[in-house]
Amino acid sequence: MIDQAIFSRCELLLGNEAMERIARKRVIIFGVGGVGSWCAESLVRSGIRQMTIVDSDRVCITNVNRQLMATMKTVGMVKVDALKERLLSINPKAEITALQKIFSEETAAEFDLGSYDYIIDAIDSLKDKAALILLATSLSPHGGTKGGLFFSSMGAALKMDPTRIRVAEFWKVQGDPLARALRNRFKKEKTFPKHKFQCVYSDELLKNQLPVDPEDRGNGSISHITAIFGFMLAGLVLQDAVKDSFKL
Image (cartoon, rainbow, N blue to C red):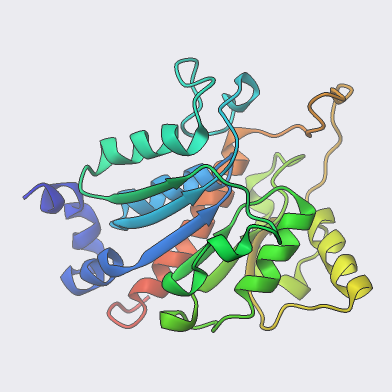
């Protein structure tokens, strides 16, 4: 069987029961750039079969340095389509739903978050990220029919040191400007997440060595950092998925 061959090393580590649990989980990832794309790959390589990937952008040449599916051959392609092709090349039996959409307050009703076991936030936009946090945490924090367990990525730009990447509860994240901006926004609007959630972050903050292109408005970033952020998000999902059948 193809599945047994692909996941034989995972099964050696985790056991059959854990792999069956992983295969039943449904995951949705918002934002499949430098962080989300690597998270998606890690999950599919680890046995997740049912995944929805959400992103409105197309691959551009400035993505090639850090985004999994971004190559000179995929520049111009819809990101979620390019990533879906990549994921199916790993496991052709995976069920990948690719949505070229933006998550926002206006589009939130289009996503049935209650049908997923895990909700992954890798959104860059402060406004849209805040909206997803508020919606996802208004659901049950324990997964199931009332909503999936929620994990969020803070800022992965302007980082170089992999040893400073950590996981913490949102209100305990330190040294991250994105987390600070989100907390300030919630306090200003007097609207807060309904329950605690884990974040991947780094307290490192470097400066761009060259002026930022005003047409791009991005900050410097590098693949080993964005990938580690994505892998850590995937690890949080997998640890939770197997916790009842495997002693960590």
